[in-house]
Image (cartoon, rainbow, N blue to C red; front, top):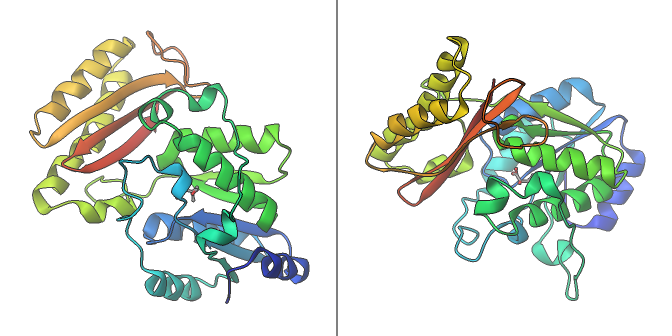
Amino acid sequence: MQVIESVAVFRKAHAVAAKPLGLVPTMGFLHEGHMALIHRARKENGTVAVSIFVNPTQFGPSEDFETYPRDMDADLAHLDDAGVDLVFAPPIEEVYPLGFDTFVDVGRVGERLEGQHRTGHFRGVATIVCKLLTIVRPDRAYFGQKDAQQCLVVKRLNADLNLGAEIVVCPTVRDPDGLALSSRNVYLSRSEREAALSLHRSLTLARQLHSQGENDADMVKRRMGELITAYPAANIDYISIADAENLTELDIIDRPALVSLAVRIGRTRLIDNVIL
Ligand code: PAF
């Protein structure tokens, strides 16, 4: 496994790498969700590259960039065990050198939900993903469905800017009790972790109500909200039922719908979703 910090060295490694090349972009502190993407990439590609970069431009000023969990040594050990070929782990100044002044302006798909609650987040995500796809030049890039809106933003970006990768979206990986894996779960105390189960439980309720014939989106959202607010530690940022392709909010669930939510558990903000 080759660990590379510079764009120039990565370009040389790309030139001699077996193709197709699969990229798993990450911010490190790897968990089984990331590893599922890596195992899938390993099966489908001649070379597997993983990027580790905590991207400052996708964090708001009051968010957790400084404290975001990091453990490079453990990450590299996991990646080596998983048979990863190339790790791209650049320092900040390699990605955003002095004078850096160009960002990707994300369109409508990034405006609502996370885009509305985290101003500038998708501008930062689209900019770094654009840079990673042009530096690493993968044939395929792998993303997790837990970040459903990010997947839509990345697909749009890849198509609109002709970046040429196949974007592969993989299912959310959950703990046995349903909690979606996230690097931020490490922030949760024992009691907060219990409250964090309200996200998956409310999504399961939405699925149940819909399968019983409930198509009124407000009714489903109300019932989800009641379930979540029964946990005193949980504060809802949003609950949305939207067209799964363009994220327009639905009144009636009459087409494939993305049910998504963001909930603050203490100081930890968690997101999750299901497709109906
Ligand atoms: O999902 C993430 O971990 C990040 O948003 C990504 C795609 C690596 C960009 O920094």
